[in-house]
Length: 205
Image 1 (cartoon, rainbow, N blue to C red):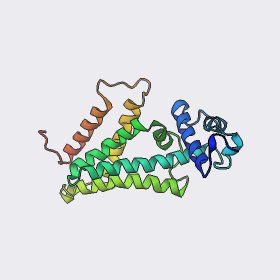
Image 2 (cartoon, rainbow, N blue to C red):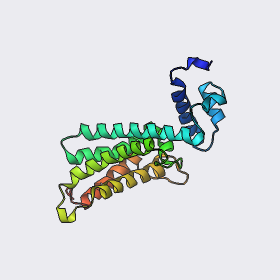
Image 3 (cartoon, one colour):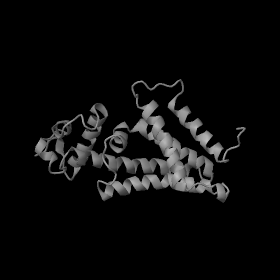
Image 4 (tube, helix red, strand yellow):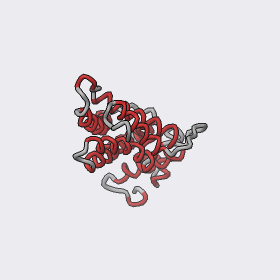
């Protein structure tokens, strides 16, 4: 009988949570399935009833992370309606907030080397998260003259790339990467410069 009273599918989630702790502590390749089993309080054989290997376990952690990420961005988007500008800025900030609050999920999603196309379920979760920012970008782009308007997918990709760069360089304790400014300030001012360049923010503000 499994330890700790796991039943009705609880063990699968317990293994994901164990993997998240290990990913955060040791990195996505720094632990074994046996260690995940030990963290969850079960035998290694029990793991294989739910996951074929470590990558499948991390992929499930990433899938759950993308769903949580999408929920966070959707909340940010909804909170600042009907202002397209405020909603867009909030969804950009949500990236950094997510990385800070859920480092294990963030690593599984963006630093594990697991392709988002590994499974349809993972791909769908990643797509859901991406489309929320694209929707915010599309809303905001309506305020740009059509002849100067970048595609919403490009618009949102720029902000995602900026957010990812700030997180990786300055919010994840990258060796040798230091800044005299907090990551939040770097991201906020970076988004501001980008939006001013598109004429969406008054240059004097």
